[in-house]
Image (spheres, rainbow, N blue to C red):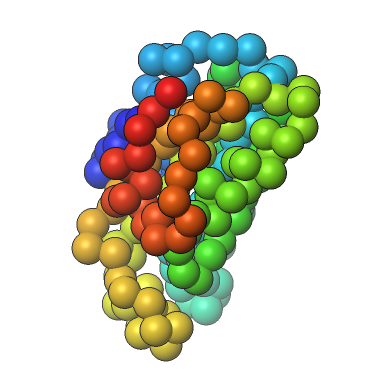
Length: 181
């Protein structure tokens, strides 16, 4: 299990901490636990997503300004998963998801489903949230969500030997406390 509140820049990703955070925790976790990329899946989850990129792109659009094409490329969280899969030779499934409540459980449930595939041995689960800005705060308020207090990411590898978990109640901070294989 690996956590981070910041990460170094990642080539091809600009303006936002979202992708560097994902890369930082995934990179460290995969280096600490090397394995067969063909038998590895990646699952990334976030409630709000890359709010920095979304906000910047929409602000530029509304202002009639041309945005950097990299913003379009990185606007979907699948972009960083593709980057990681190339870097680590991962050819298993890549999944991005969002959950309004209990993101940690949604990530772990997805990992469990993926591990039903006998061609997979492990799933790298990554959860990430950004504090965002006033627009993010307004969206969280509208949706009845608590705004994240800081930028934060967690990654852990789940495999067939990972101990069973109690159902429900796995927010990202609690996900970081989960025993690792």
